[in-house]
Image 1 (tube, one colour):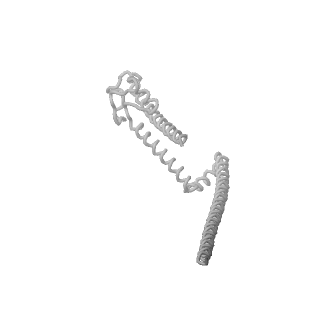
Image 2 (cartoon, helix red, strand yellow):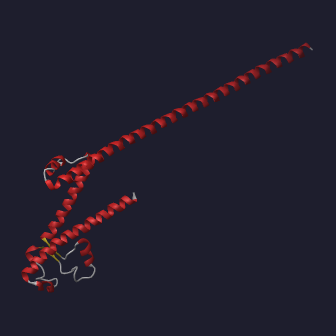
Length: 218
């Protein structure tokens, strides 16, 4: 369970880094176009007016510049942070997460149902493309092999569960029979002891009557 938590956490961090890199690449491309338009000296303007394209900017803050302020370059390297957000960087960031959400949803749907809705139709179209025919054929063959392995594994698991259940039932039956025999033996022993006590009492009463008769006779 701990390994699973570690894998989920590390994958989430990688997704965050990839989102920042994708957004940063779009921002760098837009900044390159702006610098080529106004001149290469735009980087010397600092954080104020003239250092960014006002027509393509969603927001801008004079602080938190990853190039001049200490510490913010870490967020720029890991999460793609910029103190100037453009339409392209914001939209690309949202598109990235929508794409990741769609892919995860497709994987969950395929895991629960076994296949996607348009998977067969998509494979039929891709098989007609010469460059992708071999790759798609291998992928279909591997999926069929995996499906057969899953069926065999499921059958083996059912067989093992049946054997375990039968052994449990046999053990339960044997225990019940043993308990019944033990209780029967205990009851028989108790009955024998009671019968012996009664016979002893009867013999004692008979001997007492005999002794009393002798005394009277005397």
